[in-house]
Image (cartoon, rainbow, N blue to C red):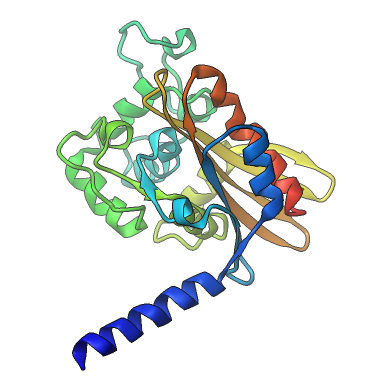
Length: 260
């Protein structure tokens, strides 16, 4: 009887999850034509409905890579590791794989060029204990920092799914995270990408194992007069040229779903 009941509960849960998802054949074609293996998720904040491509992968967790710069910024500002997004942090003086990273800078500039060493310095200033506590408060993926404060989002054990990314960003976009509204506003400001007639686009890329093959991310949200839509996409990067497909496919997917 208990086994039957457990099976029924699982069936109901899976059915509910499935009914909240609309698979897009248009996005499937986009990924197929680009010869990309990945997923795209769109969350309508007003209804909670999800749509996109490859539901199974959308529920699969991956290392967040530089998309973690968003919660890293939130935590750093909230605990006072930096006073503002413009307080300059040192990059450490070591040669970097990207020459632009070899300079001290604030979070506003660092998040734009995805400066890894500057954000590693921010994480060290936060400290492992406060980082872990605040990560749990924010509920970001599996909330697992492991034992290395400046690599857990680059190499693991922190992982998050595309659906979890979209839901996390929905809370940030609406100032619903358990962090001051001023901090949330400051972080939204530094991930603003572009604006058009009636819409504003925010986003952040990530590349686990960069510059080697791995998993690439693009996450963000679109604010429109008629609603708020958060999104997350990830794909397998087989070679460096695949990195450009993150934003290319992401933008095409947003257009296919009528968001842009």
